[in-house]
Length: 347
Image (cartoon, rainbow, N blue to C red; front, side):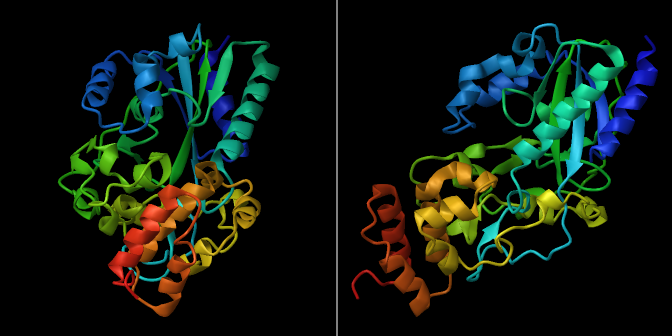
């Protein structure tokens, strides 16, 4: 078989399915494995115990999917033209751009499966498995080693058209020709490092997840460390600060994928408004959203922190007081902290 010609067809099919870039990576990640294990040994994964549980499996594609020779890495943009609410202060809630639309896991997984079906129609049955942030996969490492971009100093994959994109992978036994990596183009810039509200980017290409707002508001299941709460500001689900300041994102073009357009006014909602949602409203309005995965309890925990950092007003204090006796001890703790920030506990 002419595998080079097949790769070109795969790229064409991928473009038809909405992928802006498709590259082919070697499945040998042995050079990256020591860095991964060192990061885990330092405990920088926080409460993400699944990362430690899988350990080196993340760096061994052929153990996760036996027979894997290559990884088809696919990129899909979620950049939108809408203006962002300000981060760090104010009455508006900030929700990371990627989470304002439909759950990307569902969108990408469906497209990757359809791409595999196109390949199967061409070559016959072949071994494969698709992933969208759904298993122990070093997706950024695989993407940058094959030239979908380079690793930015914030540790995310970055290209000349920015970093507002999702990654998905196909592990396959097809011996496709691999692509070469790109040179990195961050130079001396370290705006992402300087912009991190909590100092989670401890140096170029180094991230301590335990301090990252995305981790704290999404993956962290227990109480948010009190010393970090004031630094979270109004960011109630994820954080984009390191991307918002990146010069390369000034070249990003809005996605043509309507599934990633904001839903339910999440790009302009106030903290008080979101805090007032009942659990039934949370489930209904966030159906099909990645946010729903954290559950109602952590949703309220996060917004309580945001309200504690918001400008003091009767609406803010009334909203917090309405949840002061919430059945969840986790919610009550963060509500009491927020009220104390407004000197409202004694009145």
